[in-house]
Length: 250
Image 1 (cartoon, rainbow, N blue to C red):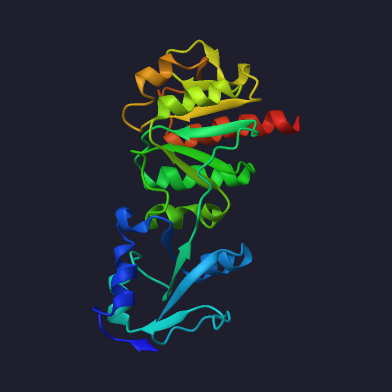
Image 2 (cartoon, rainbow, N blue to C red):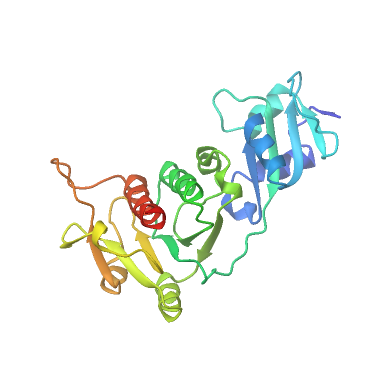
């Protein structure tokens, strides 16, 4: 079926998914490689949209699929040079925190999509299956974040919480200790045992909320030999995640 009208109901529904308020448990992925990964991961693929004339090397017949004109496709894509394939995925995240984990990362109002995507990829590489985010953190299912995760979005459960302080108190009741980074800290990140720990990564401009920092069990700093005073949020998260990995494999 070739769709030529931007007023088609399917097209209007997909276009709405550009806005967080309409996404809920559905989001868009773009490109053939990430679609292949979604198939391998047995994701719930609700719809595949193919730009007219696009050749793809996978069989999509068992999925609901439509063909659209280039003009229509361009109203749906956010990519400068699109591959001509996008898909709608339904992902019903588990909203319950896994308290059996021994390491959890929390994002406190992180704003940059690239940072979010990189952190999700890093968590995936470390086999960490969940990420807790404050309600004002950038949406993990925005197109920019999804693209930058390179498929890791399928393997990390993102849990958005209403009140981060309440969540941290609940984690403490479940025998977790809270770690925040601070330039004023005396303790290095390499002086902490990362078993049963929660690491909070703060907003790019303002860092971790002061109330959360004051409620933490450890304030640590990443040692730096050069003149740079601070690291990018995703780099800092990566350093701390891989200190956990180092301790796991030593």
